[in-house]
Amino acid sequence: MLCELLTEARVQEINPEDHFPTLERFNAMTGRIKAAATQIEIADGRFLNDWIAVGLSELPALKSRIAAENADDWGASRPHGILLCNFHDIRDREIFFNNDQISPVPVLGRIAVFGEREAANRHPYLAICLIGKPDAKSSYPAVLRAYAHPCMNWAKWALTDSILERETIDAIQRCRFGLSNRDIQIRLTKPLFDMNVNMEGETQPACIPDFLIEVLSRPLSRTVVIETMGYTDTRYRNRKLRLKDYFTAIDLRRSDKLARLIHHDPSQFGSEDEAKREFYKSLRDDIISINNGTDQF
Image 1 (cartoon, rainbow, N blue to C red):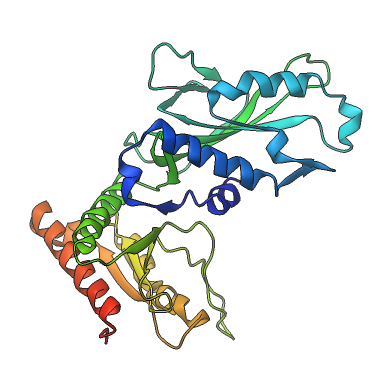
Image 2 (image 1 turned 60 degrees about the vertical axis):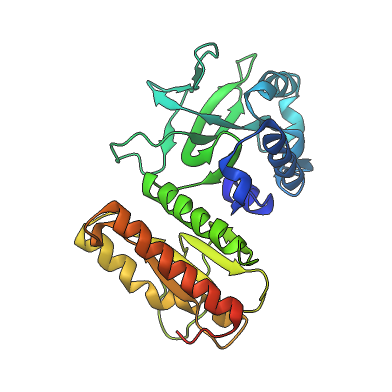
């Protein structure tokens, strides 16, 4: 549900201004999420837009609506809703916010965290929480369980899988600003669903690129796929490298050309500055070639 909401609301499209969060951009994003929620049915005849709190300030009203519902009217389900909120940390089954004046939100059940074995704190996070009565005897709803995933910032809830992915976004944005001086505009997206092109006779792994870049002036030109190489672990890197043919094949859905694959791989360079320069140069040169129609890679 979370992936569907964010994709339909275009939250996973990352724009130049998204690094500069404002209340206006936050409100525009939450409005698109609520519009996308009109298409998701959570019970017979009940759609998510009436049962979602987008941001902590909307949670009390959602709880009150759920508390007033007759369970018999929900058929096989129980009255429930969804909270989406941005937060800072998780400790002892509580969600903490980056503001000491906001009380932490207790979660009765499990809080699943994407990549929870990683030691590094990757705040901010986006949480999707199930809101409902703990049992038939309870009179008031609570947060029953939650899933948390790192995201960009408080006003841009695009999911990011790691700190290094955020650095990849920063590097792409720097290149994007440079390209804008040449009047070259791009679309940057972090997809959340499998993009495999059907290949007969083989079992295919899930193909979900880290990032996609499209050159807007040439809408049918090849896509640039960006993969963040986040670890030096051999098995991890080999798995990523085995996906190359699947990543480059995603453009075969619309043309006879293969997508371009670029790795953001700081560990292969002597310094962080060198890694940034090489990634910038590779990305800039490929996008300029695509824009000019001279791409031969």
